[in-house]
Image 1: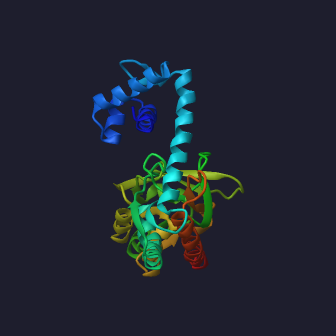
Image 2: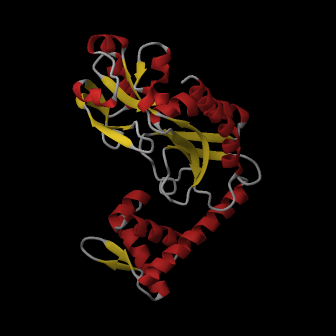
Image 3: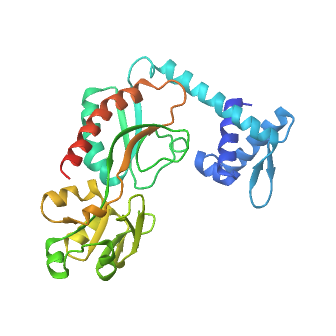
Length: 305
């Protein structure tokens, strides 16, 4: 029995919650997944998983063994990367993820410069407005906007952005400029599903430390910030997005920012990684390269507010 292979399959099965899900994740035949876990239990002379028709759950021995397997596999991975030279010189593939618009505007130009500077590093950049799991998806580093849950990730702050409300000049001329968040309830809006509640917009209140929620009328709901901004430019309605998403349209005079004094506290922008053990040089090189450049970009944006 290849014990490391069996450990990897056991970890995937435990994390996925079923043999079939682990089979799909690993691209390994289902009978092979089930057999490898059974062989491991036979070798250990103990049961690791409780099987039921609905799901799998760990036994007490299985939970302890899962933790040990993860630690062992991490050590093996580090040893292999060290042997291949990842800890001796910056080389190999670096997997990054960032929100779609932020990644296109800010991360992609930095990656292009980085590739020219480090010819032995290849980069895979995944743009998504979902927070992809770093460890499960084997992502080296992510750009995260907003407060981070207590997940054990290592974070480096590079700046901040703000939720803003904008509309086209023609729209404001026809409908008037809102003076307070309450005015939005009577005005057509464009909503963006990526926010926690597309039709409930939150603002700072006149009383310090408080906030106010306004339920807006969505004439149009879309699933990307770019589509929401395009609709607002066309005059469909007011839109609430993040400041970096509307910055270019504001600079070009296509959108006008309103309700500035009711904007909430800025959201942190952070570079995050798992931070388990010694960082490969490719990851340390990108962190050192990207951090000051993102700080400059976001600092310039704050200066233009």
